[in-house]
Image 1 (cartoon, rainbow, N blue to C red):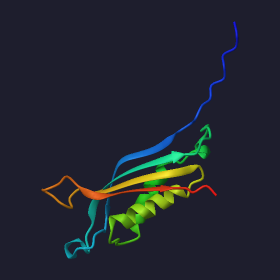
Image 2 (cartoon, helix red, strand yellow):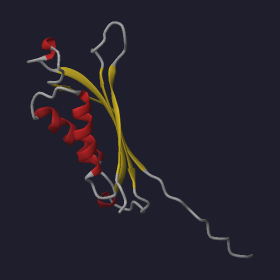
Image 3 (cartoon, helix red, strand yellow):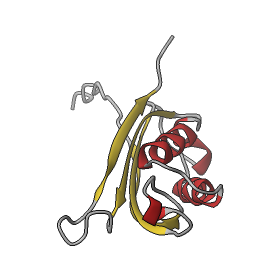
Image 4 (cartoon, one colour):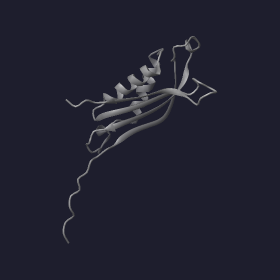
Length: 128
């Protein structure tokens, strides 16, 4: 029996954190000052094309949660855009992360007229 032809493989892996809920002091309006609001966060991290054989080869999703909680703990943030950018930069700082998509929603921002308001940000590592 002839040996199988080697496959040409492109490896694409993602680390996902979906539906992270936390409280943050966030918002520019007067009624948003001095109180926390709920945030719903999704993070998608594309990994470089290396094999993941151990935790050190990937981005631990627990570090994503800790980064988000740490940003919220730093104090008041005016814009969800700022929160999303800080979280995306923290995720992209991990070795092996080449692209990050962060979605930050304020579920109560437009209630009862809309389910949520927020922002989605995508950062990609530039290859030089």
